[in-house]
Every structure is written in C-alpha cells, then in structure tokens.
Amino acid sequence: MKAKAIVVGGLTGGFGDLAFALAWAGAHGMAPQKLLQVIASGWFGQASFDGGWNTAAIGFASHFGIALVVAALFSALATRMPALLERPLVSGIALGLATFLVMRLVVLPLSAFPFPVKMFTLGAGLDLLSHMFLFGTPIAFARRYFGTRSA
Image (cartoon, rainbow, N blue to C red; front, side, top):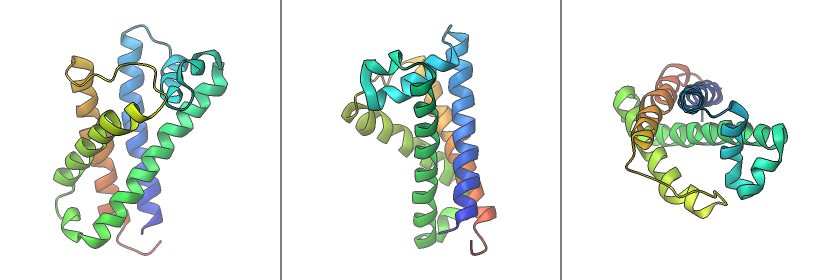
C-alpha cells in the first residue's frame, strides 16, 4: 500500500466531508462541538452529549480514523485493480457512494448511535453528494497521484 496516498487522501477526504457537515450543521443552528459529539455517539450513545469537548475530540478522531481506514482499503483495492486509478473521478464517486451506504446501513445501525438513520431526506442527499465528491474523490485522486511510488 502507498502510505502517502493513504494519509493525503484520508485527511483530505475527511476534511472535505467534515467541512460540509460543519457547514450544514451550522446552517441549522448546531454548534461544532455538538456535531462532533453526534459522531462520537456511535461509541457512547446519548452519553456522548454529556462529555463536552472530550467526546467531541473522540468524534473528531473517529471521523478521521474512518477516513484513513477507507483510504487504506481503497489503496489496497487499487493495488489489485489498477483500473480504479485510470478514472479516479468515477472511482471516487463509487467509493463515496459505497462509504455512505456502509455507514448508513451497517455501521450506524450496529453502533450506539441514538438517532434513527434516515436515507431519503435533503440532508441525507447532500451527505451522499459530500461523500461522493468531497470524500471519495479526493481519496481516489490521492491514490492515483501520490500512490505511484513506494511509500
């Protein structure tokens, strides 16, 4: 695997997706701390909201941890299927779609996340677009451009 591509892609994709989430939450009156606690609620359930900045920090770290894992998985897959790197935009969109679906249909329902998981709302649609273009696409382009040399 290509470490630089994983780090650059994971951090860039994680930043893009988190920036969107913070902007969406802010537009709806939610403070950054609470949004990060929502992320941490996958670990702690409703208790996440009693943890202040400590649980917010865990949410932040969890978000970027997932982004780095997704980037590593994509890098491993691209090593076995180099065609993924020929069209990084298409690959990134597919990666974002897959990540969105796995998070909403598997990870959140199996975690302590205390809210119903919604698929067909404006927020979910915009989150899907964020995953496709701000999360998956940077990961795919990073693997293409930073993953050509040994790390």
